[in-house]
View 1 (tube, rainbow, N blue to C red):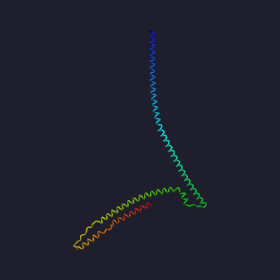
View 2: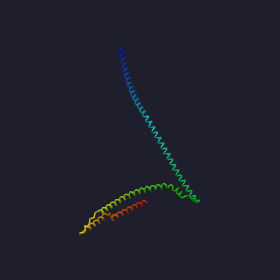
View 3: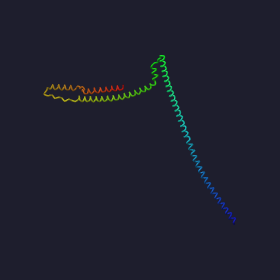
Amino acid sequence: MASRRHEQEHEESSLQAAEAELSSARIVLESIKEEGLRFTTSIERTRRETARVTDEIPRLTEQEKAASAQLEDDAEAAEKEKTLTETENRRAMSDAENIDAEIAAAEQRIRESERHEFTIPRFEYEYLTGRAEVVHAVAEMKAAAAEAWTEARRTSEEIAMRAEAIERELGEASAADAEVTNTPRRPVEARGSGSAATTRMEKSRRMSSSSKPRAPSSNVKRKRRVLTLNCLKLLAGKCRGQN
């Protein structure tokens, strides 16, 4: 009886131990499952990142090629610009050296001519010594010509405006004179009783005298003469100012 109880207790303790191991195994299994899920998620994320990088590589490659081509073009353009600048600098230095050499040779010839009574044409010396001032003189001449052209254009515009004003004033004066000329005169009534023949002769004489065009009045002539003189004075003053 006691041995049987002892066996039951032993079996119960064994069963409890087995259940405890089973529970522990279940916990470990759950932990393994969670770890596997995390690992799977990490693998999926890594796969997506790898696919994105794979898709990004061609675009980056094209950008790199374009940047390299642009860099090569810029480098080639810079090299050409550098070469052109160096060529221009060498040409300018060569021209300066040639000018200096020509001036030195001219001065040497002048000194030799003073000692040996050897002369060179004056225009050659002036050309060689004054070559540096030629560009400056030409620039001043161009600037003066441009300024003179501008002044002449402004003067011509002013003269045209003055001429229009003078023509307008002359037209107004002519219109006023014509208005005065065309104003009918009141006929003077004959006093007394004249003959019919005398009356007809007087009417005919008045009609013939009124049909002739009257000369411009002295005021209009004087005004035209004054305006013409003013215009001539203006033109003469502008011409003197340009000279």
